[in-house]
Image (cartoon, rainbow, N blue to C red; front, side, top):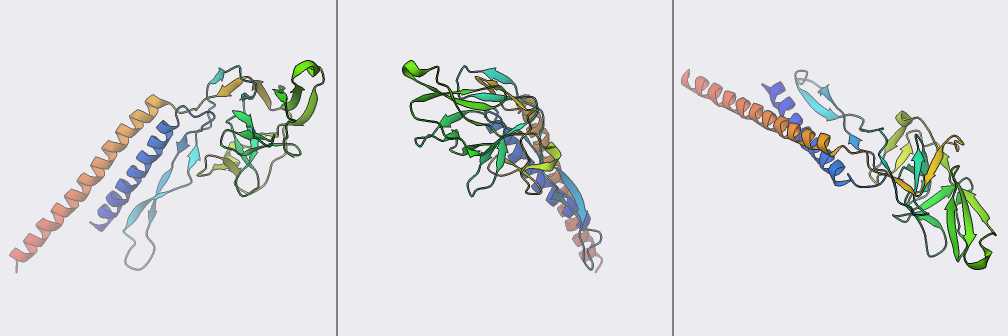
Length: 247
């Protein structure tokens, strides 16, 4: 009986957690470069005296969907998408290095190339600074050039090169801020094989229909777990009645 209660109770809790993950994926169905979360669960026996029959469902290592999203042309100079596998390197809050597929960039008031969320985009030598009164051009290999406005458009200045990396996806983990980091804390070197597509953005890889079907299945799983708990409660009540009758 106790094993049934533990499995049903923790199963219902994890079904609710998976519902939250599916809802989060759906909320980011139009977020550029978003990678859908993929939670994983496993059954773990309780350790300790008198508890070998109790088993509960626990959250295992959460992963993410590695499939690329659709690339759409925007025509905007500061929009870039990755061609195939690879990541842009950015500087998260608190320092260090993190990675993203979202290539919608902007130039801050201080002339620093940043993401739409205000994180510095990293080049091979650190953050990339754009001279004032200059347009930005990003080449296929990630080279960032500043093109002066006015009559000096032939005086192109190379200001840096995007740091493009391509570590194995299984060596990366997704943080709560939506950025990816190496599990061992390392910072991979630039990969010259990674190429970008200018004037384009990679969309989210969330499959809306798949997530909606998943939410329906999870709702049914939750109802099933609750019915198991109700059955356990009913069995306990009947057992108590039988014991009281036999006295």
